[in-house]
Length: 100
Image (cartoon, rainbow, N blue to C red):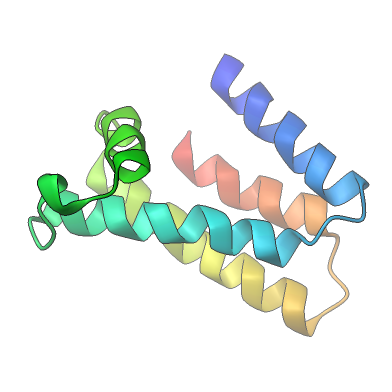
């Protein structure tokens, strides 16, 4: 639950500052996609940059299906935020729930 609270806090900061939420989503999506590819054996962990390796290690306990669902959900959130007047905080919070 602590991790979920920290996710929601970060989302609140991004959405509350008038921050670019779609840019933040892309920042999250890139390493998540890399982790997914590495976990599937498409990309070797040794080939990742140091930051990617650290992220890979932190995400190693998350089931592959949850990572894939989270990526799909963030893609949908990005689509909604770019094309509708949806509440950014609620859309992204809903996506994060895919991890828990």
